[in-house]
Image 1 (cartoon, rainbow, N blue to C red):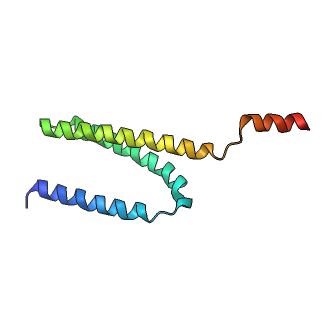
Image 2 (tube, rainbow, N blue to C red):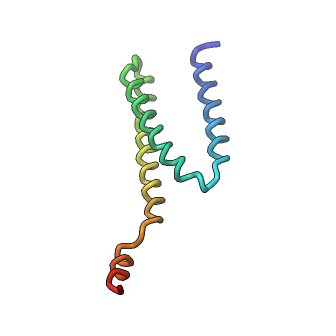
Length: 103
């Protein structure tokens, strides 16, 4: 079996495992897991940059560049989603000022 087939097999299996794991997460646990996932995405981005920096072929460089772009989008998107979720738990600014004025 060639090395490319081994890497493709690992990739396909990791996609299936990822889909299974994420589909089993309840909505209650989504926000804490999202915060932890953001840290993991940062590590993935660093790994993608390191692998792209050592690419020896044009194809490897192109795939690495795509990996860096996707990892960046994933990480930034995760922070945006987490921030929006946390906004739901904050009081509106005008509401706190009205309560202070009524006392």
